[in-house]
Every structure is written in C-alpha cells, then in structure tokens.
Image (cartoon, rainbow, N blue to C red; front, side):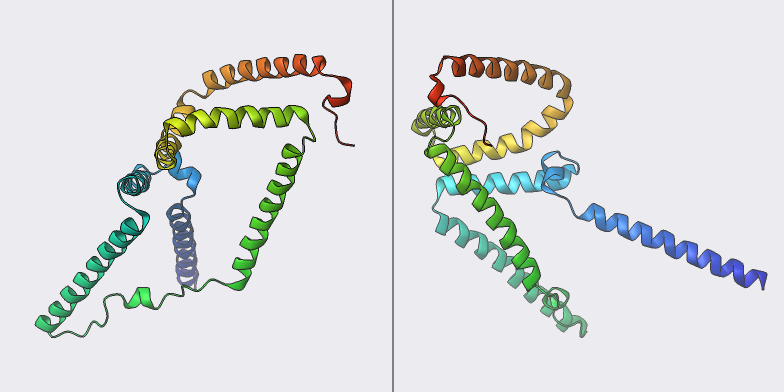
Length: 222
C-alpha cells in the first residue's frame, strides 16, 4: 500500500515537473518585440535583424513588386523541392508517410472573430486618440505644442532633402536593434544627461511662455 502511494506521488510530481517545464518552454518560445530588440536570444534577434535589413536593402534596389515576387518565388522553390524530395524518398523506400506538410496543413490558420474585433477596437482607440491630438495641434489649442510640431516639421524638410523614405527605414531598423542594448549598458549615464537636457528644455519653454501675451499663453484644460 505504501509502495503504491509512493509511486503515485512520484508520478504526480514528475507530471507536475514536466508541465512546468513545458510551460516554461512555451513561454520561452514566444518572444516579444522588446525581447528581440534587446537581444535576449541573439540567434533569433540576429535572424530577424538580418532578414528585415535584407528586405529593406532589397526594396532600396528593386521595386516592391519585384521584392515580394522574388520572396514568394524563393519560398515556393523551397517547398516544391522538399515536396519532390520526400516523394522520391517515399517511392524508393516504399513507405507511406503521407504529405510532408501534413502537420502544417492541419493547423487552423483562420482568425477568430473575437481576436479580430479585439484588434480592431484597439486600433480604433489609437486612431481616435491620434485624430484628437492632430486636431489640437493644427487648430492651435496649445500654442507651445503647435510651435513644437512646426519646428519638427521644419527639421524634417531638411531630413527629407538628404534621405529618402527607404533610407530612413533602413537607419531606423539599425537603430532599433542597436540602441536598446547600448542603453541597457549605459543606462545611468544616459538617464543623467537626458534629465539635464529635459530640465534645460523645460526652463526654456517656461521662459518663452512668460514672454507670450496673456491671451495665447498655455492654459490647462478644465
């Protein structure tokens, strides 16, 4: 009796350990964008960075239609070659393993209506917030914020004269994967200098606001 109880306890503990390991493995297999740009897994981050950079460089040299067509053609070449190879192997070995992509073909790739509606609602919330912010900026509800936008747009005219859109995307992709690990290593020093810069900007804005006429000074929404 005691032996059976001990065995059942060992079985339950081993099952619990296996479940815990499976849950950890499932959690590790799902990496967020934050994990990728912080290089938590160098292999996965390297693959994503390399593919994204290669795609952007291809778009810089070729048209979008050509890049998409070549990517899909390469994917088809891989899948067709593998399908023919498995068919030949099965014919030689006289085995009946079935379609090599059967497991993938049986997976459900449909989007659940609840998931679709959730993402649409979240997107709609961000769009409405953006529209309200644009209305405040372009109708000059706050003069300081509208002036900030005007300065940013003026600076972007110079950026647009030097770089085109795809070049900016390439630089953004490089910075996206280069800045986060650099910031993690030098977080204290960067935060210190950022605080100094923020203080200087706030002081300058406060002085500018004091010199503005009372009718157009920044007012807090009631």
